[in-house]
Image (cartoon, rainbow, N blue to C red; front, side, top):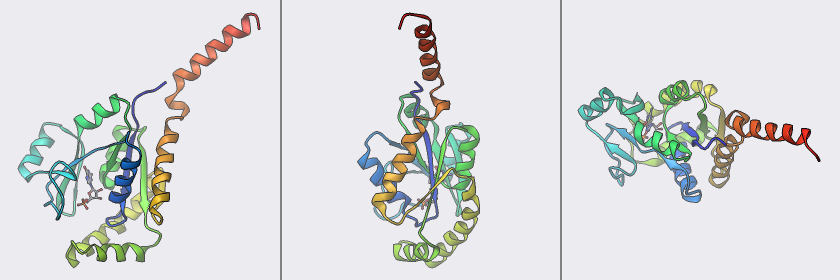
Length: 211
Ligand code: 5GP
């Protein structure tokens, strides 16, 4: 059986609740590995270096790019964001399913490099709910909210390139949906060709012997 972990990309508009969703998912199912990205954006209140992100200067980030230590990176609202390569590869080699919570451009790069990756897009129940959540966050200035909404419009057009959507209305239900979608990937025939072949060979042996 294919023991390599599954690479899962989770995207969704700013304010849609991806962060909370991923936190709940990883708390409930301890075996998921949530990748921690590097970024040049300033830490928000309550964020810690090495927990939410690895906070970097522009120079440090560009060094990571030069040394090819990121599987993908993108510029989002004026800041760099990128996924550290070693963690992702190591965890997948150990058979753990790895989750990347990243934006559209990064997601598409991942799909190119890892065609087997599962791409999930988290949607709000409707646009008004998203605007409400963004305004309610209170940590961002109005022009930042506007910039993030403009970005959401672009990302909505890109959502068609993902595999599945999750409508994040009821958190509990969304967590179960994400878990179910990831779990089903393990049973894909393309990931289990060796097992299918082994059973086929055993059947041949049986079919020729005594029953
Ligand atoms: P925030 O600043 O709100 O934490 O994140 C802004 C956006 O950057 C979100 O859509 C988030 O998913 C995305 N993001 C976070 N880490 C990465 C990363 O490593 N690569 C890419 N491409 N996007 C990321």
